[in-house]
Length: 340
Image (cartoon, rainbow, N blue to C red; front, side, top):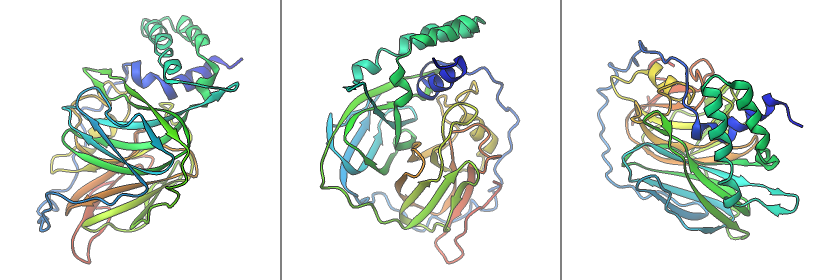
């Protein structure tokens, strides 16, 4: 029998982002990003449309509301997910691999039976009846602990398209998003079946390389210049942080008045304003969390300007998981413009 603490940890790792309204106080007097002296960088390369390269199988994904529109079945192997957010809200797409338990493949129908447990538990916890709330978690199926977060596309602002390539094993998956609207998480999900195929076994070729870990945070190995890049993101480790979720990587376009503290608070779902619409910045994609040792590839057309990489974790700046950088066209293109 798992302890209540273990159940609570796993529960949040899977479902609290769908159901819990945070109760922490956000930072109101945030620090402004010190980019005023850099924002006069001229965008000399104006590209209205760039054809992004495809690695492996291409899966086009679209959101027009609270939905994911994509094929019901795809082949296994290296897969490029090109996600177009045509809704009015910021979204992402996290790929959950459902386990096989006691010889039975867990299905999307099984997955849908979990939310009522958490609705009942969170109603009790939020009303101050924590002991009764924790007792509700005894109703969770044991296979909940075996779901594997397998990457996906990071946060994408309305009207933007982002692309991420990951390796998907054969199996049954759920695509999900849990960004908030009106202070409440809006669960979006869709089943995806992946069939075994040997056609897509060649990984992408990267132009830039990055690593993320608890010890080193986000480590960019080269200074990005303007143009089309495929960025390899290596997950050197993966363990839950204080909010019981792992780390991921998201790309942000910074403006003169971007408040880095506001951004940092927004990345924590436990903050009242965290992951709530509207987002305080423009998100351009990234990669969702993956197990230790996995690599995802983000393909993006970088224009001259100021950006940041940020993970969806509490206090990302103190963990070196909010890294600002400047993209320039010339040989002086450098990383780390502004305050980290």
